[in-house]
Image (tube, rainbow, N blue to C red; front, top):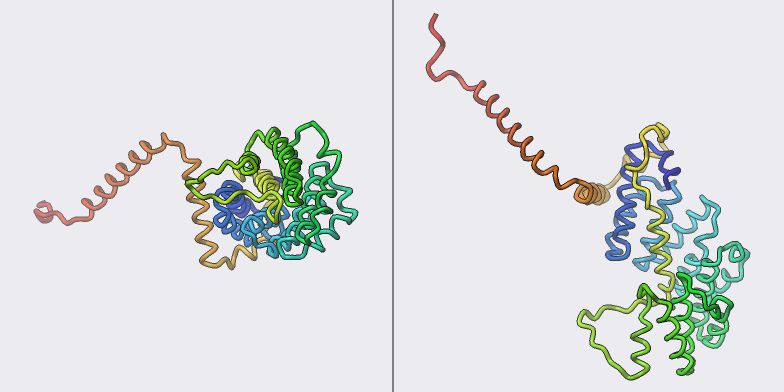
Length: 318
């Protein structure tokens, strides 16, 4: 992202970076708020691939799958990378088109993915099979060397969980219990609810005081953890890390035309991004200095006011 921002005027790059940082900070806890900031960044720099990608993940996190798919396609055109292929296929599922997701699973782009991307694509394809009522085919889709391996990778808990969930839907309860257990063993970060699923199979009931929705790791949002990782990596370099002389000073109308016609709503989002960034970055010790400066300003204003008042005793006598 640093290299892409360097192509923008510095002031514009700062504004874009602030909004992207807010997207990364909020996408997991408050997706709707993150989506708002992503729209500002998109308005300011729609020709930056990292902005399109972050906007896509923000839309994806709020289940705006059509919008997310459009942004991912734009980012793919700009970069030529196939990294977004699995989440693009998952967007097709979210739009109720599992057959398109299955078609994407057979495209040459899948062979260009790294191991994590191929596992992600397998999860999406299995989910599409389940969407179409093909549970046995979904189980077969998940059976792979990655599933059988004893090595633990970031995607291992979700792969094992998805397999266990598919087995349970197929009525293979004993096997499902075994794989939920394996998912739990590998899930050090608690990315799945494997422990709750095991308890349910054993007849143990829990009452959740907050009644929070369980994360769906096999349905349409099955690639959500990867989505968050992508969004964070896309905005991990704030504009403050970029030296002034790294920027290409330009007044290209194509880069700034969107900035000139921002709506009031987008300006409000930008103001909130500035305020949030200042509240995070301002050092605590700046408070006494600010108070001292305020007192100094007050004294200067009083002196000016006294100087402007006429002399109550009249003009001085010669």
